Image (cartoon, rainbow, N blue to C red; front, top):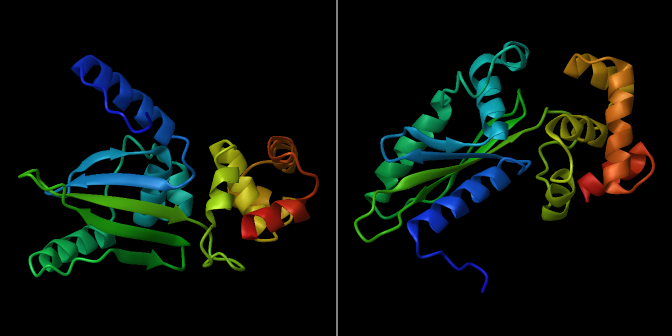
Length: 204
């Protein structure tokens, strides 16, 4: 039966470990904060997005995003506002954006009930502000991106924007040959040919 929760503590611990490992591959930043705004868990995409939010793209690229993780101030402010709204029974999810950097976050207050403390669920989306990047990715596009590694996703998303190989190489600070190799891997994993098809699939 799908969604069945194991009864034994060992089995639940195993399920949690597998779930966290699976969430690492999700091509969207996921961040969980407790009621005191302390991070309980975040995946690699969230660490990267928060590093860019805090330090800018260039400096963030030189950081170890996981080890130096700090929740960006705009997200903390949104959480505090949500908590205040919840006392008035009007807490709706907030959207926080830094359009100049292509950063977007959806912040939701989750109250499990039964005397358990609330938590904040944050979805982070880091996409450079070019072309139609303000348009959200469809579920189908997210499913395709989930097949790729983080570096391949970075290349695919810039192909979506219409960037040439040299431009992608410059932005990501990799050689054009590396970009071509990663782009070939994208074509293979998505079973497609050509950059135009990549852009079409990710924009649908």
